[in-house]
Image (cartoon, rainbow, N blue to C red; front, side):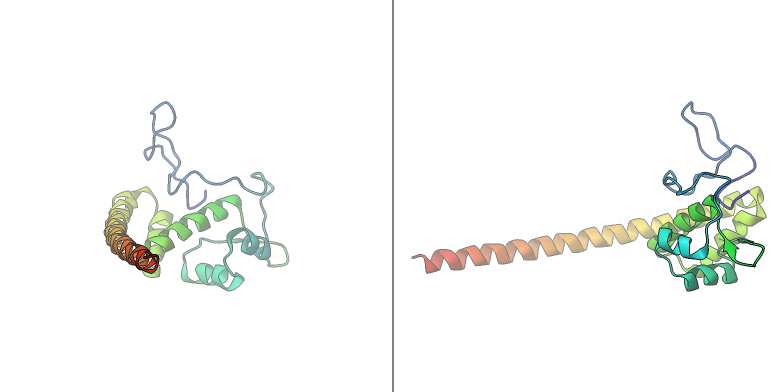
Length: 165
């Protein structure tokens, strides 16, 4: 079972409105480069797919943000489609501005299982509130920029009109 999956169906509705057993952590996962069962990606392949560095991937594993990564018979890391999904979700959490410590705490709660659903939900709701606050601040900033752009556009047109007189 990957970090993105759960064992019981209580999280999200399927097309028929019934609960599913998959933890819907982000937008629908993008298509994987390889089908399940053939998904043993090297670290360099994951770097190419995700844009993360090998150093970052190793660091995520070291701090507990990534669960156990399989290894080849020679000891090289081998990532799965589930690992790619998790990295996609972590990327979304990073975009929210969530501190790394909270991301690690979330990953630990996922590994602990269903008993942490409420705590996970509270952490994500808190993060969502923070994101909405930042969005409102950015919208206000865009409005200020729009006013300034309009002012300079009007001033430029006025100068052109004076020059044409």
